[in-house]
Image (cartoon, rainbow, N blue to C red; front, side):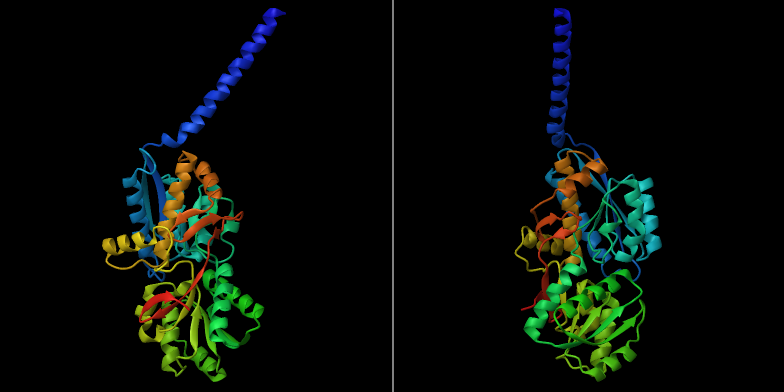
Length: 383
């Protein structure tokens, strides 16, 4: 009996010792990161969305450089693999395949467009590699799976605020709506605007559509002009939006009729392409260059110094995305894709240039939107 009791206590002691060893390993894992941690990024550097991708590439590279220099991940360094999806779904699929199979990345930033994300994100979801969308605002992105996150505020969260703020300050009661009906992002923006307008009791005089790469909007705009709306709501990418604004003013739509848009407006390229026709255009946004958010001033100055121009919202979201991933890697103490995914899901009140940042239960971002307006070719707070 004594021998049996002795053996029993020895077994318990061994189990406790084993448990203690596991706990020590877990507690110290955060300081044991070493080597290169491969992260992928997929941007639209050429093609229709090339007005957005280059600033994302610049900002993500700058963030990686800062993180590696700071020693944030101990002895480990992030190695960034950047791919150009050429603004197409096919390009995004090819880029994801390369990053996952050849480069063996543990997480992916991007792609730039929601259309591309709908095609490529399922590949990463199947591989159980987290994706952090930094400019995908259409519906149905995080719904792809539990490894898909975004730090870009979806249109359904931004546009109600945009309509509420602009309606309160401009007092419009009737509007015309113009949107691209062959793109997930622009269709999603239209859906968000339509619901917000209906909720606020704004009359929609007409709804007009166009396709990507269209460059003649005269028929739609002539009809809109004849209906005399108080404002024109546009869901479009920057190139088409610039054409709509320029042609609208040329056709005699008065400057008092404001163009109000979604996330596609949030590039300095819009004002460059449309010139004076973009003056006073309004857009809902996730970030403003003058934000008094943690590190924003330093970020803007560093970006300007390194690249010779100011960052845009797409740069700010890409920059934040790298820091979100680095924070998750540090918290997890691991470069395992599953560990990174789990740590990301628990991010709450992280200081970022976008403001205090959290993910909700659906892996959507939680932070406050803003409304901005183009004045003298530059964005400023709409007030």
